[in-house]
Length: 280
Length: 347
Ligand SMILES: Nc1ncnc2c1ncn2[C@@H]1O[C@H](COP(=O)(O)OP(=O)(O)O)[C@@H](O)[C@H]1O
Ligand SMILES: [Mg+2]
Image 1 (cartoon, protein in one colour):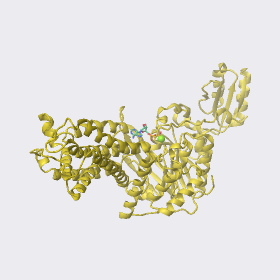
Image 2 (cartoon, rainbow over the protein chains, first blue to last red; image 1 turned 60 degrees about the horizontal axis):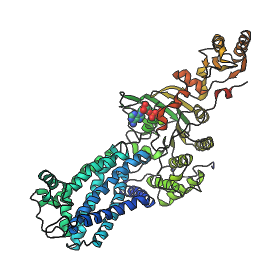
Image 3 (cartoon, rainbow over the protein chains, first blue to last red; image 1 turned 180 degrees about the vertical axis):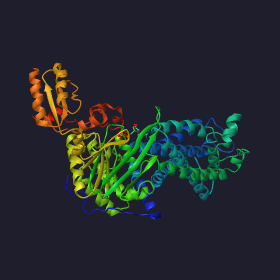
Image 4 (cartoon, chains in turn green, orange; image 1 turned 90 degrees about the vertical axis):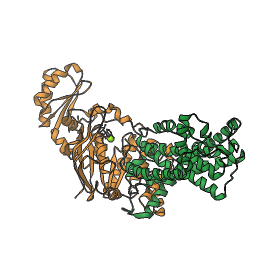
C-alpha cells in the first residue's frame, strides 16, 4: 500500500437543491439496476413468473370459467397484470430489509446525500422491473389470443395506471421492509396479505360468482377497482355488469384516490423512518 | 484544538431484560490531528458512541460537535466532514469494488469524472487493482474491509471514524491497515477508532478512553494509563502450580496491590513501586521458601493490566461474548490471537 492516501483530493463537496436530489436518486437507481443485471435469477423470476401465470390461468381455467360477453383470456389479463404488479411491489420491501441487514443503509446514512434518494432509487428500479414484467406478460397474452379493444390512448392509460399503482404500493412495502427484523419476514408477511387481496377480488373470476361475504370483500377491495379500471380501458370487460358499489362504479376515481393516499401517507412516513434506522 | 467533542451522551435501548444503558453519560474530546482509541469490551457502548457521532443514532441526552458543527442539529453538514467505516463492512455485494467507491463519490457530489478518478486511485492504493472490477461478493473478509475503509476515504475527510477496523482480519491485513491509519494521521486526519485490543490502542492511539457500561472509566495516553497500575510489575512463573499460594503470599508482601494469578495457576504477577529492589526481595524470599522457578522478571504494565485494574475483569473474559459473532452481514469476525503475556516479560 502506498504511503500517500489523499493526494490533493477534495475535502468537501457541498451540493444542494434539486440537482443533487436527482443525481443522488440516479446514483442509487443505477446501483439497483446493476444488481438486477448481475443476478439473472431475479430477472428470470420476474420474467418467468408472469408467463407462467398467464399460461396457467388462461389454459387451465380458460375452459372452466365462463365470462359473459367475452372469453376468459380477455377477462383474465387485467387481473394477472394487477396481481403481478402488486406482488412486484413487495420487492421494494425485501430489498430495503436486505440493505438494512447488510449495513449498506448505514453507509448511505453517513453520506451527505438527500435522505429520500435511497427510497426513490429503490422504488424507481422496482418500477423498471415491474415494467419489464408487464411487457413480457402482454407479449405472452397476445400469443394466447388476448386482444385490446380500447383505443391506443386507453391502452397506454391502463398500463400507466397499473404501473403507477405498483409504484405507490412500493412505498407501502418499503416502509414494511424497514420495520421488520429480517428480510424473510417481509416475504412471508406479504404472502399472507397479498394472496387474499389479489385472489379475493375480481382478478380471476367475476366477483358476482363469489359467496356473499367474499363478494362484499371483493367489491370493496381496491385491487378490484384497479382490475376493473384496467379491464375497461383495455376493452376486456365483456357484458358482466359492474357491481353496484361506489368503488366499482367509480373504479378509476377509487384507484386514483388510492394511489394518492398511498403516496401522500407513505412517502413522508418512509423518509422519516429512513432517517432514524440503522442496522444492528 | 478540539475537533470532536461529546458531552453527557446517554442512550437507552429497550430489551427483554429491561432497559439497557448503551451510553450512560459519556464524555469525549479529541484534539485535531490525533488518534483517539475507544477501548472496551463487547457491549461497552463503543458502536453506539460511533453511531451517535456519525449521525446514525440520536442520543436520548447529551450533545456533540464535530469541527464546530452541531451533530444533532445539522447531521447533513456533519456528514460532509466525516468518513465512516462501521463495525461490519457496509459494501454492496453486487457492485464491484470500483463501482462501490464511484457510487460513494457520486453521493458526495464529486461529479462523474472526479468520482471515477478517485475510485480508481483508492482501488490502487488499497492493493485491489486486480480485484477492483470484480463484484465484492467474491472478496475475502480483508478485501471487504479495505473497500469499506476506502469508502470512508473518498473525500479525504477531516475526521475518520473506524469501528473495530481490524476485528476479524488476519495479522498481515491488520498490520497493513495500521500502516494506512498511521499515514492518514501524518497527513492531518483526526481518527477515532474503537477496539477491543489493547495492543491496537497501544500501537495507534495518541490518547485512549477506556469505556465500560457506556461511560468513560479512564482516560489518557497509554503511558499515563499504565502509570495508574504502577510503575513495574514483577512476574514469576512457577515450575508447579502447587507453590502458587506461597508465591502469592510473597508477592503480596512486596507488591502495591493484589497479585494476579494466570488461568493455569503458574504465573503470578504484581505491581510494585521500586522494580529492581522488589524483584530482588521477591526472588530471595522465593528461594528461602524453596520454590522452584521457571522464569522470573520485571515488565512494564500492559493495557491488559490497566483494564483489569479498572473493571475487575480481564479482557480475555470478553472473548467468548456471543454478541461478537452476530455480525449483520453474516461474516463472522474471528478474533486475532492476542499476544501472550508471558512473552512480553523482560528476563
Ligand atoms: N439497537 C439496539 N437495540 C437494543 N440494544 C442495543 C442496540 N444497540 C446496542 N444495544 C446494546 O447496547 C449496549 C452497547 O452496545 P454497543 O454500543 O454495540 O457496544 P460495543 O460496540 O462496545 O460492543 C449493548 O448492551 C447492546 O446490546
Ligand atoms: Mg461494537
